[in-house]
Length: 249
View 1 (cartoon, rainbow, N blue to C red):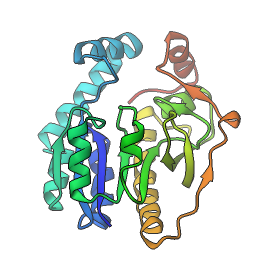
View 2 (view 1 turned 135 degrees about the horizontal axis):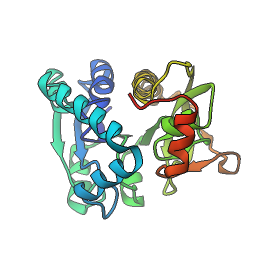
View 3 (view 1 turned 120 degrees about the vertical axis):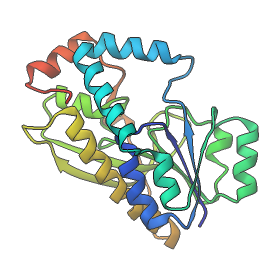
């Protein structure tokens, strides 16, 4: 089974995810493709300004410290790929015809999206023979959208979870094929919850890939009418997050 991962350049949380997954499926992985950590039409400056407006100096300082720490430790998706003998390559657009042709030439059977910020179009979704999977940090169909860990803390949830599903052209929609639930602790910060979420997601991803490979994967359509969707937090949401005693770091 030939696997390709579509992800983004996050040196804080994703290296540990890929450490676990490539330890199990490195030999079957054709490549890990990394796209910019930006939404459609967004520049790096616009992304930085939005983050500052939302989370303020505390958020920027904490993020900066962790980025510097990751750089000093030389920990990145690229370094994890090199350790496991897996190609890690930058690609600006996962829907671009040349990239689709590249995947087709490689004979990719399964695509796995992990925090990839680009919307997948039909030609990409239908390309892999065994399907296109997405890893989402919530118990779908609840908490579709962005930053689910933040929203769960802001809303006072006692449990979090991760989901893996076969995607369609809607956002966070398709056929569920794996899910894991875990407790949210009173001491959890956004950072600690994200780390535990990525660890659970890595274990679940390996389990789902094994089921896909063996032909035993079970699929259940997600009922979006029973779910919820969240976009980027506004000032009121951040205030609720802090009033609940939660911190970013």
